[in-house]
Image (cartoon, rainbow, N blue to C red; front, side, top):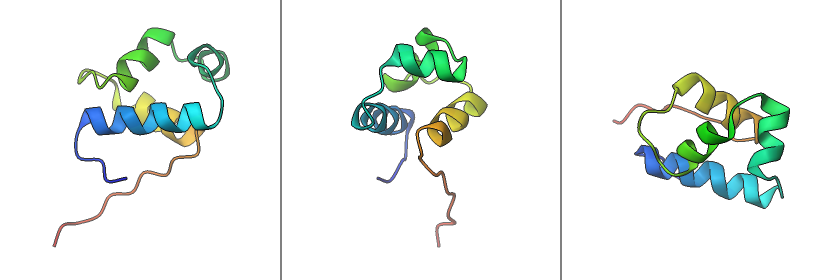
Amino acid sequence: MKINNVKNFGECIKEKRKKLGYTQKYICEVSGISASYISDLENGKATIELGKAIYLANLLGIDIEMNERG
């Protein structure tokens, strides 16, 4: 999935979490990240913290790669 905005990123996180059968509560317990942050991220809120977002994506097995447009 090509990510080009916060909404796409949140959808990707939510889709992967559900595919793995994880609840937001479970992710909170494992990661120490608050439920409100996870909810905001999955709903595309633009004020999320990038470090936490990358950590959560990696926790779910999502690799983030940057490519130059060319």
